[in-house]
Amino acid sequence: MTTITPSQLNYDHYSGTKYDCDIVNSIPHHRKIHHLIANYAQKRLLNKNIEVLDLGVGTGITSKLLQNILPSAKFTAVDFSKQMLKSAARKLGKDNVCYIFGDYAKLKFNQKFDLIVSVIGLHHQDTTGKKKMFKKIFSLLKPGGIFIFGDLVTYKNKYHAAYNNALHFHHLVEKSSNKKTLTEWAHHHMFLNDLAPIEDQIDWLKKVGFKIEIKFIKTNTALLICKK
Ligand SMILES: C[S@@+](CC[C@H](N)C(=O)[O-])C[C@H]1O[C@@H](n2cnc3c(N)ncnc32)[C@H](O)[C@@H]1O
Image (cartoon, rainbow, N blue to C red):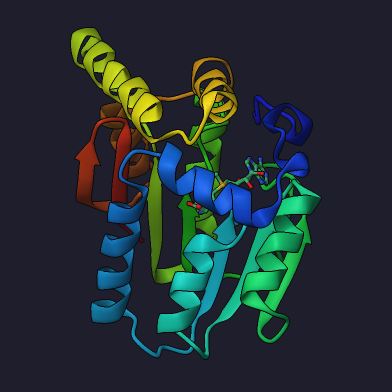
């Protein structure tokens, strides 16, 4: 289940440019995981004419990076915030991009994809919701398809979880441009995020049939490449 509404996330009040600046500053290692995604796409997917689904496209940061590497790919961009979709459309354009407004947990898709990407997009699902989404993503991929999964996570060991959460807040204090931004993102992290241990998420992904390559795990941020 999606545990949050777009109005709670406050994204509809954001200008795309302010959001782009805030998300990069507020998510620990946001730049690093996008750098790793670009490297992977350049090595494995360059110029491929593929179907890509972005679950929680936001302002289109992740899809834009992929669009530059895969100019002939067709994108389906999903978000339940109209404002976010508008900002994504400004970045990604109209050619070869289909925009879908709605909750990805409830939407039915009538095609299969070569690549599904969700970066900082699934952590508002509760445990059941995450498991269901992993199953849904597996079933939406063509044989051999790839799921690029980057997200905020926590850890099974409570001390390790506490330590990394402290680092996350420290990151917010250091990087936020002012008190209002810090308050907004600290509140978001404390009360709106629903993080699950990375060890559990890897188990759930394996159980639905994925082969996992761990690309990055640090602080509360992880990047996994999941192959069907
Ligand atoms: C934080 S943005 C990430 C965008 C981009 N990948 C990045 O890393 O900058 C995640 C987006 O997911 C959307 N989102 C969260 N839960 C959703 C759901 N259940 N259905 C559709 N969109 C959702 C939010 O509205 C938000 O725009």
